[in-house]
Image 1: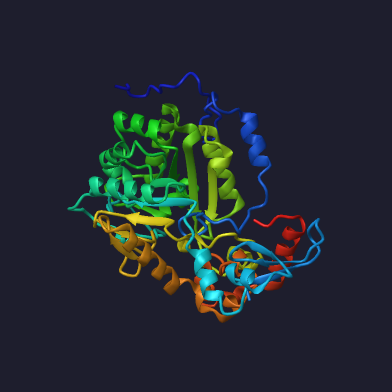
Image 2: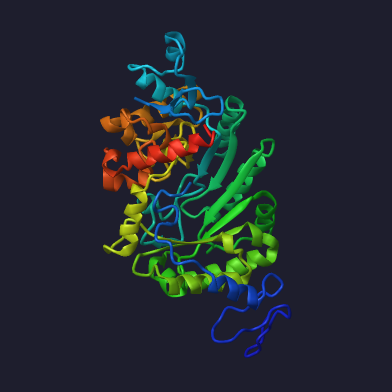
Length: 57
Length: 383
């Protein structure tokens, strides 16, 4: 059982602060995340999610 | 007519006629017998269309609804009307297994896909496992779409990890947008946090590369800021970029940029070599606890009912054909029926039906499409 006021952390992860999701550093680095976010193309309004549009296949 | 005249596009210097439905090409000087055999003549349109529509499918999806129960009631759910609080009858795995096995005997070259959807499929995890176990003699691609709320025991998670090829979890953007659309039905305090917690567990269990996170947002929330937050959240957890889908729900509530762009996309000339998924013969089956088989996930009713799970496959085939012939918009549109590009359009995606009704030619860019087809041919690509 987890005691009160004690936060148990996975040693493989690190906090990035500012309410950001903690980074699963064994899968991805801060730099990789930043690079992807910075390079997202302009929002494509034509892309729609299944299953609500039929553009599912 | 359904034929295109091909101009000097082949290395042999011959002139050809190409039928966009049968995808057959024929020398311009062919005799009547040859023209008739390959459906090139006026008066053969109906036969030619049916011949092209009712080929054996390359791929078939069996959408299995383990239950119509769900622990959420989402504002944008496409099957909200089907959901039940408690289901008295379970799916009959034995009948479903027999149906899919019989199908695989009739269509030996068709790739088989079983996707568990719902309702919430994980409410009936045991039934999903039973079905997969019963079908293990067949080569099948397995997937599941879930809201990821329900905790699964380790036994089921391990089994799914071994047997599932993909697992799609619906998370609609940020915590705020998700929880505004996805309301708890089962005493769940915070649907978003609960699902994220389970995503993390699945990642740690080894599901990372098989996981897709899909977001469907209202147009008012469909913006780059929310997309960046959504991407960042799940990239940090380890989800692959290509497995993050961020989309807008259509039709939109506002007359927004998203809606205009969607309509423009529908009008764009796009080469589609096969009909919209709804009209792919023997290509989609919905199976639920009624022991009936339907041809549509979105509308499981009398109009899409194909028969019982133990019906003869010949009856299912007959019913499937008649449903397509009765409901496919391009077959009701005279302009489509005489269009030389029909086999590369098929009346566009059914999602556009709310705009074009039974007249897809009202949303057509025939000239551009024919130009694209000719360009394709000029490179010698006749597929």
